Length: 444
Image 1 (cartoon, rainbow, N blue to C red):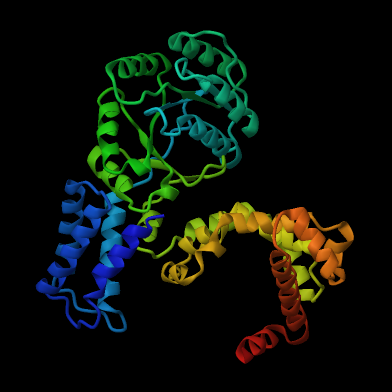
Image 2: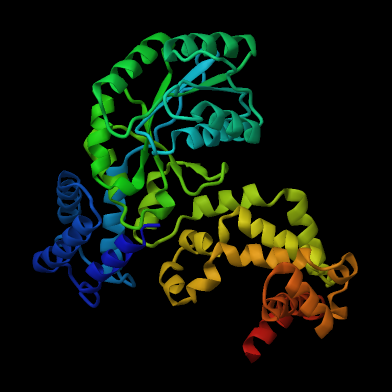
């Protein structure tokens, strides 16, 4: 995410390395590179001008702090200005009289229906709210059925109605959610291939009837600054309270998130970072600014770890590690499962401070989420006895496992090697504690 922009910005800051004082000429040269980088990232020109003016005002004449690289000092200034440009999080209003209505709008293909499910899951699990879903899209084939399927996966009720009138369905949804004693009602409105008067008029009528506490525009981040035109068209029709940017994980450029926030003045509430129903995160300006600059996002990293690992699992794993008791393949499968929940190694490296540059040096094939899926397939192809005691895995067994998992024998060998190395660490911890482990690392 934001790899293109992060690389460009790193290059722009390199010219400041070794400077003892940030002169006007130095800053202007860096800002020219920064401007070109943002233009290539498809950031709207007004947003670029606003950002650069703020950076220049703070950077010119700055004394370089002792022990701080000038480039790093400017990065900090740019970080602060990016965070200010992105603004505060668009927090949801959830304390109104139930059912609190959340109205989702946007173009067809922006991911509204999937986002409705993601939002329902987040509200149910993170906010402990009782959620009700309703589709008002009577035009797109199977749209109503799609939301019903998503609702089933999330475990929340959905409107059951044969009506083909969006207004009638809105009335039915309001009554059904109230009858079900729901805290939240999410209305998934129809989209079109492009903004048109019919779409906007229908949306305005639904808004007037449902009186939503939250009206969220769902937009595809990969549209770049073109998404701002869409956002402003919707904003002129209904009072938007927040934005949800989908497919942000695939947005290497980063233009949409910067452009939309500046051009519309509407705060970003959530970002979609994958296809899974758990891949929705509350927007945090400082976290996004850190990712854009390749500086990571520690808060999101901690949240991902906490959501993927329960306290009991963490305590059990720590106890087993410190006791020196050997891990088996079942333990490794659990750890791989935790890694997959957190988005894989590539996502984690994006969130770790200082790991952006290292990520480029790593074989990208090793960061592919499919690698973790293959590792699980290998372990699942083992018998219970083999998972419990991997030392019995001779050549013949490894060939059988590879065939069952649809992988090469080398893939099986890698899992076995991982098991051996992990147990080597546990033995060293038991024998010599941290000193024993550091001794091993020092010998390599």
